[in-house]
Image (cartoon, rainbow, N blue to C red; front, side):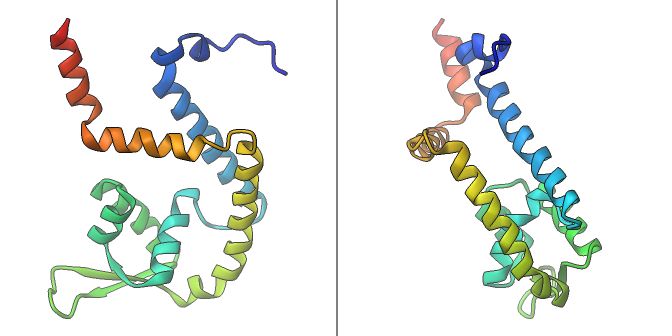
Length: 162
């Protein structure tokens, strides 16, 4: 057990968002380090896009909406994946302004190996959260509450209540 004081934990709810970000960053950077150690030329935030496009070809907007990521964030990820040869695009047959994104042959060849690594990662997350069985349920509740009213709206309401 680490006896070092944790300032963010001491702050309780004041440190909540920073603790969530810290946790996310710890896992993200460790995942990136893992991929590098295994000579995988992928990024942690590509995983879900691989999974979506493995099911069917999609537009950038569809991916953005499905993952609830901003359009610019998706553009950045997709462009990196294209540059590495994992995604290709072609104009939509019904609307030439849209690009249909799909996995390349390289992706399809690599997916079985990627799935082994992703499954090992899922097992790791299971180990980390084993004594926190309710964490996904609690996370769902937080997401639902935020979908009913953003942090901004709620904070403005609370500010003006004072």
